[in-house]
Length: 74
Image 1 (cartoon, rainbow, N blue to C red):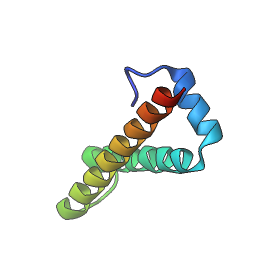
Image 2 (cartoon, one colour):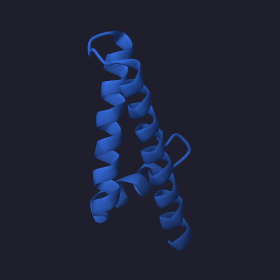
Image 3 (tube, one colour):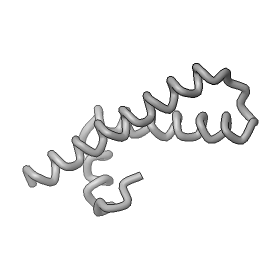
């Protein structure tokens, strides 16, 4: 998910920031559900799938901002 970010920075936030950790887990959960729905193993209607994709994107955007803020203050 964080292709251009050092893994150590992500790991540090996962260890130290509860909000980041919970949001990271939620993003992973949504990622799996979206993938399962797209593969046809999780039956979802189109509206629900679109909502999940939007929530996943919002989570990723927030995680990226949190990571950038953390690196800027380090």
